[in-house]
Amino acid sequence: MRERRLKNEINVVPYIDVMLVLLVIFMVTAPMMTTASIDVPSAAKTKQAPAEAIYLNIDEDKSISLTVAGKTSGKMSETSAFDQIADAMAKNAEQPVLIAANKNLKYEVVVHMMDTLRKQNVKNVSLFVQSTGK
Figure 1: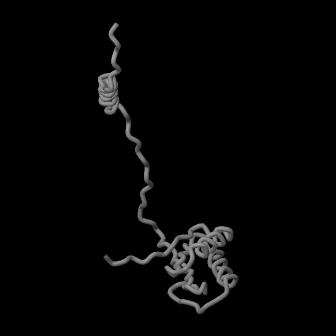
Figure 2: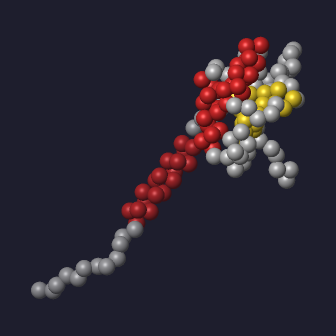
Figure 3: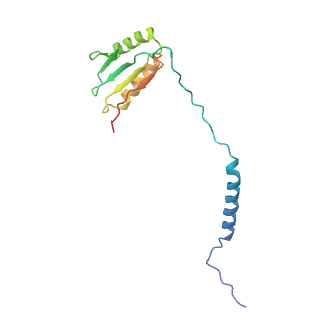
């Protein structure tokens, strides 16, 4: 009796068949798929100009100063700065507050300031960045 030898090759024909069937399925179904659309709100011209922003300046040594209506205050404590911001919010609740922090400052300090402003019901808090001019 003759012994049978084992083959050391892989039959790839079934894999090619499956791949071609999947390719045809995707080619048929792809044009039928609907693309998602995002409705972005548009901004029209407002009747009233937006309020001047309050700048909360934080230096590298964690000292705080405020810039309100173009006038920069000296170094102040965190509580007095938040008191002045609360007074400004009492006059105009929609007034934006921009946090301008030194780039060498830990991000934790910036997040703490943002969190404290949110707890004081400041609705419009943003980060102030400078363009690189490139």
